[in-house]
Image 1 (cartoon, rainbow, N blue to C red):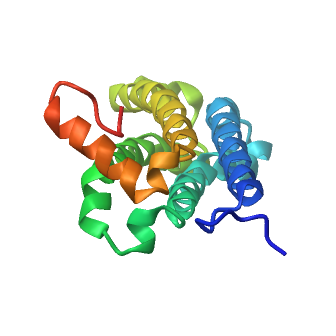
Image 2 (cartoon, rainbow, N blue to C red):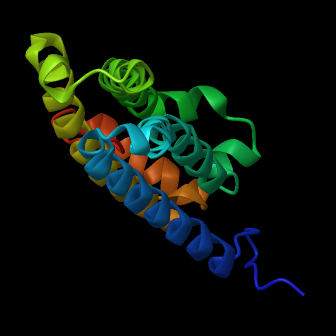
Image 3 (cartoon, rainbow, N blue to C red):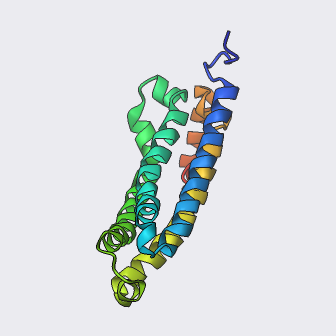
Amino acid sequence: MSSAGQDGVSPKLFAMKLNAMLILVILDCFCNGFADNLWEPSQVTASISLSAMPMALHFLMLLLFFMLLWHTFLLRHGLLLQLWGELRGIIAFSTVRFGILLAARVPRIMAAIRQTSPEAFWADAGNQVAFFAHNLVSVIYNAWLLRRSYSLANVRFYKPQLWQKHHRRQSASPNDSSILA
């Protein structure tokens, strides 16, 4: 027997998905924290793994975010245009973050494969910029994605009447931030 309410949302399952999102973010932070510190030839496998894993984690975090959306009434009733209107920022920010992630991690993987010295790798200004941008954007992205994930627990995503009331209030005051804030 499920503990889902009349809206088909199981609080226990939703909480498990939120906890899984938190674990994925922690793993992403761990990989990003140690990937650039392994330069010894004996650490090539670990270096490549820690550099490649954030790419997979990025897609898993996105997949899990959309799994959190499954029981919202927008998705249940096929209101995909309204959903797109609310979530286009997540897609845009995720795309930007993934591009920066690739710019930072692909050269690092190539350096590990070629066994490039740390001095030669960091002498390239492009690697320095990508490293800085990736670390900055990843922190902002992970915090923002967690905030967005936890905000999906708001009842307005599951009750059409509350959604319409919120949507009317949003359109009446254009200076308010949307769901993406």
